Length: 409
Ligand code: LLP
Image 1 (tube, rainbow, N blue to C red):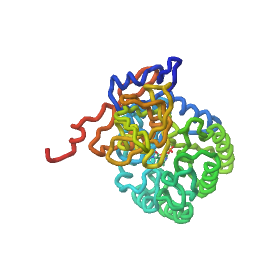
Image 2 (image 1 turned 45 degrees about the horizontal axis):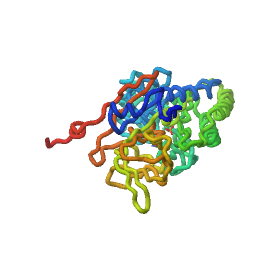
Image 3 (image 1 turned 135 degrees about the horizontal axis):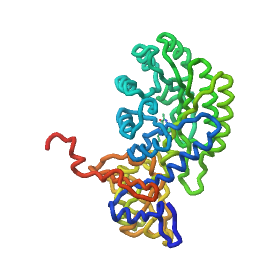
Image 4 (image 1 turned 45 degrees about the vertical axis):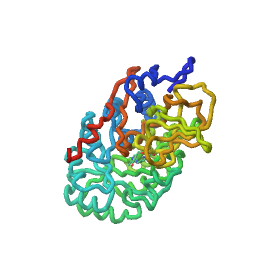
């Protein structure tokens, strides 16, 4: 989003307020140019090695975004039959899709294998089932839990000792026993440390653990180091230095490949890094309440559309698109849901009036995909702006959509 000389905001030259006039409020808007740029940044940082990007599509499963990713050479990481199906609709086939389940019914794994996807086995019971079912006929990856805590928020850490994800690296002997028993073809080791990880150090630490573990698996083709790169939330925020990370990891990866005796592929599966900054949730101010304690700005949205501030205490920068140059005042920006759904506390915003359009930044990842119909509210429409063209890529939900699964009509 750019502020023009005329003091109005635009996305690829398009006025977001016009989009609200045309498609209604609230509205998710994605800038395809940002997604393309983020993909190039990652490719550039790892240009010296054989690196593949597997987009963790739980961040945003809009089919147009999945198609865009496919067109620019990004493959897919999915966690459910639903995501897998969406990947296929978007044109992904076979091993372009990795299935990274978390304690799912084994039948889901079977259908993923049947569809040609590569599976990331995340528990010893699943490994045992996989061996019994497929022997050495279907290759798979193993998700290792390296027992490393990284990132600032324990709710989105996934590799510390207490985390439910993956098979603890301390169980390596048992893993090897099951692999040997069924002659399972392990083609990759995977780990995902968590989300919002800024420093290179934890990535290097887990990489070393995985490289060390890899020495016990002679048939590897892939090392998958997951996602979790931190993006910018606050103006001037420090983020993962991708070029530095690329240089450091690539160096170690090359040494590892030499020791291993073969050139492997390095996979990353970012979600946020690729789509967070591309997205904006545009909302309309309903009521401005000047309470003795606080100034409240109510908007026509809430935790049903963007739950990250309430769930993780996440900061989402807010712009007043209708009054960019107004005098700044502190506000609590709150939703219309009958719960405490505070988007921002004591936030300095240019004066807000009822009817003003606000934009929540960083809404491209874990925004609409984590939305709900709580309070029988409907989900917003989605717009993708790409090559200077705004396209409706999801229509707004209707009451009929909401009633569709109820039986007593
Ligand atoms: N790979 C695996 C196995 C994952 O579980 C995840 C995210 C990713 C990759 C992508 O992580 P990312 O690059 O997006 O950080 N809803 C939370 C984030 C939870 C992420 C869950 N797993 C949020 O809004 O902050």
